[in-house]
Image 1 (cartoon, one colour):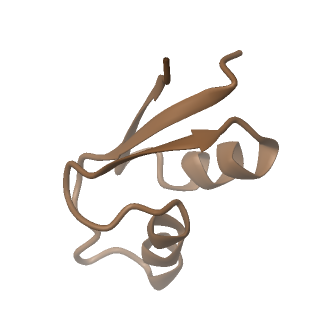
Image 2 (image 1 turned 90 degrees about the horizontal axis):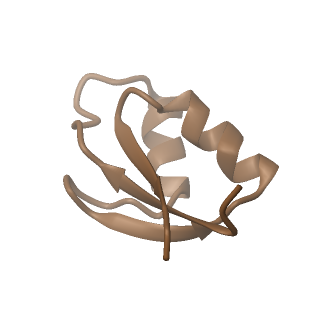
Length: 61
């Protein structure tokens, strides 16, 4: 498992539940195609799983 993950918002949060929008914001994603590098923790993995249909995840270098 990688120490860091690169998370990219690939689908819009328009017409999504408030909790999904808050999760995307909590991951630090602001707009479409914005990427952030995050530590690979259980909490981050849970947030990613909740919005897995909106984001793309890959190991960060």
